[in-house]
Image 1: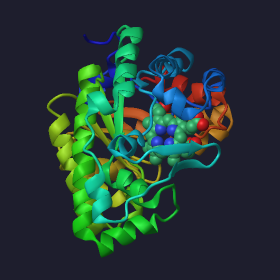
Image 2: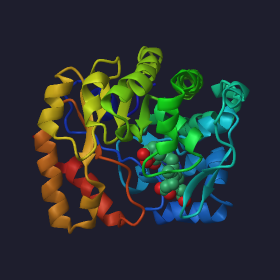
Image 3: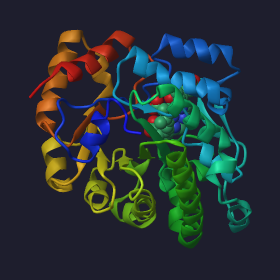
Image 4: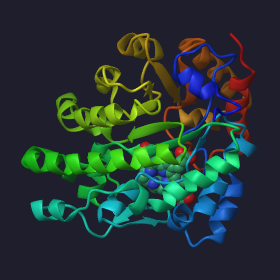
Length: 343
Ligand code: CP3
């Protein structure tokens, strides 16, 4: 069924649209008091993610409250390591933590290749519920972490500024690194295909830690696997690849079968268009910190961004997720400015 508001999907496929569509990374979350209320009722973040009725409720909140042109299923990229055999905890104000990490060949052999429908049934069920509850109002975005970013958490066991343990593994155990990356890639393909089958209209691959790799490492350990995912999913739905802080990765990503290339705010818009070429849609790329500024500045800078991208082949977004201490009205100002703007 075609959504009533299909701006996102038309912009994704390069069609001309009446206006630029907008959604925000981390649009469901602590910025919304309504999210915090649902979250307070649950034991914690993981319970929310694992209870399809609640995941569905918070997925739809930003559509109602912020007026965005797409919903993104409420989940986390770390459900994949868990489905493969490494459970995570989300520690309040600290972030993710894994009790077991990957160090040896045996650790890798002990991991399962995840089966989307079974091992991640709670996400798949949340997608089915959300799709029904949205009743075609806006498209639903599915997502997964890129293999390198998931690998980084599996080796490191938590967040890190440098991900030096994960990078050390690439330099000291390249063959084992490929074995693990391939297993993650297979799991991710199964998972994203199950998301599409359940109703996801577009999928985004988040390579949040791409920027810690050298360009050569990126080609060998990240891009290769992203290409596999794009080739498996692109025949089904448009695929977005967002490689944060990896300005050097744009050219390689542009050569994959993805439809949309995500940009962070450090990437120049005109330069990115020249690198990516005219055939793909760009997504982004406002600095989330702009939303700490006054309303007038937000409006002015947002319009400047829209003009720089131009009237076609653009999906407006931030250059990374919303920060939790952003005021809701400032987020609305960003969204409303985009929705009111005409070329
Ligand atoms: O609205 C959306 O964008 C959908 C939901 C979503 C979450 N995580 C919910 C979440 C998405 C798309 C993600 C992806 C994700 N998770 C990424 C890739 C995007 C990025 O930010 O680079 C990464 C690296 C993770 C791993 C992760 N999850 C970290 C490092 C943290 C802790 C930091 C933080 O913001 O608290 C999380 C927790 C998390 N994931 C929260 C939310 C709403 C906050 C948890 C809470 O409610 O307390």
